[in-house]
Length: 351
Ligand SMILES: C[S@@+](CC[C@H](N)C(=O)[O-])C[C@H]1O[C@@H](n2cnc3c(N)ncnc32)[C@H](O)[C@@H]1O
Image (cartoon, rainbow, N blue to C red):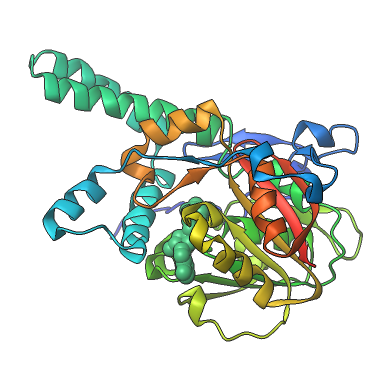
């Protein structure tokens, strides 16, 4: 007779409303269901440093910092193909490289990488030792940036940024959605949301979004009680479209057009086109919401250490004032602006 086996299914929705107010760290990421009160709101976002955008000039704010360190994959591709890597190809490399880090069992890999480094010392081979040490450093960085600080997803900063918008059952268009995190956080906060995610790298739909953990809890709103509730990916109404943003033929039908880490990948000659993508699909009174990485020392260091993971594309780091200038001079009013852990954020509307 076959022995009976008990197979433990991973819990798909492990957190309930009883966990609201708590934060836990697992081997991949931090769960953060801590709420923000009016009193501690400014701990998560530094808001509205500019009073009057019409008084600001590029001379006042300067230009963004361009990240120059390229990934090895990009350098090798360009040598083999004898030309610059085009943006679409570069995004396919970036998304695969970045996704690999989200699925790592970080404590396990940190332990293994340290023991590989110790073994490498015995080889007296400088390139092997350098490579082993590089992996140790990258894992330490990732552990700090993603698991400990939760700087990449930064749910409390994003919630502070998305808070207080006049939205009822919003239609949300997420441009360059990748794994879709921010639209899910926004949708959780505004019940009844309909989310359309767009990315021209199919891998984002089939892997980055599909593999985004079903068990990750977003802190959202309960429409019946107006209190907080836990919302999961499959509680949300999401359609994922694989296409170039330039091909979209939606009308002005969205309450929110959102992008996260898109504007900074376009040199100045193309910024007006990106601004236009945020205007074209907005209903009158709708919000364009954008975030871009901040120009701060620790971010410069991050993009240096993590160059092989992150740097396949043109990339700038900017201040919130520079970011606001790009949108203001391209016909948007800035309703609110601020910076969170590693990104700047803007809420704007076409003038
Ligand atoms: C830097 S990523 C967004 C950051 C994201 N939060 C992440 O974790 O990777 C930008 C995304 O925009 C997509 N993208 C860039 N240009 C696009 C275009 N013209 N049409 C559609 N998607 C585009 C890329 O494929 C990429 O997945």
